Image (cartoon, rainbow, N blue to C red; front, side, top):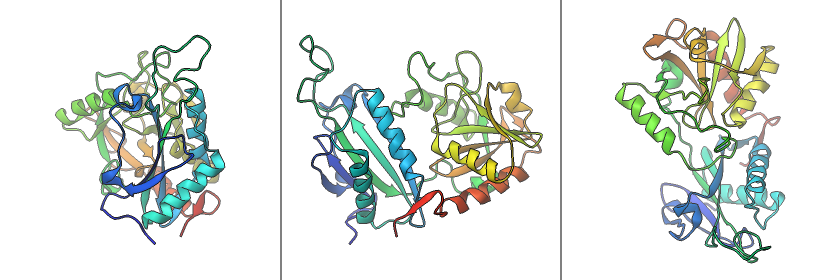
Length: 310
């Protein structure tokens, strides 16, 4: 029976690393202002999607989440297998069939500064906060943009260099992206593609970037999220016999591409038809991008790539 009592979905939350937990409506979910995940930004998250009752690449999302928690010494008390069961149970209780599924970990209430020499940071009793959110499916860009395409800019804001914060550590620190989006809005654009400090293409707001040139696919190889949806593009490319490569790309490569698109769990594939007042190709979604979009949504309900919940 669905326990989604309000419009924004359902949340399972635990303050002891997953040993115990409670359910509530999303609007009633809480994180303490004393949680370092809030006041110091020490948090990680992952985002999976369910479409027509199928969750695409759930194991890949859970594995990425656990690898990132391990890298940041934010290990939960619950195993990957038990956590996956918890995700599925929360999804079932939501009653939703098209949903966005967040996994969230925060540092918790323990100190992040001084500890006795030899003790672990946070102290011997430290446990992370853990949440699963299940919300109605959302699109990063309006759904009609899949048909019409979007226009973007290259903003003055640069992506964090790997030496400061590796973008593989998916977290809620998005202030630099927010500032870049302000530039895009002020320029009359729909979105942005940031450059690295060295001037190479990196990523958009929660999106990976792909270019199409002479029938081949290219995506940035540095300073970019290791996206699960981007992995899907490689899967699709293999099935469609298209060469796909991660490499260094510049603004020139983007300006002169035949086609370009964003990919993200929240909306799939969105064609990019213009950048910095320049048309990409003929300024319309291209034929290869359209084929990829069609095949992507079929993938979302394919048992080879997805788990059926309902």
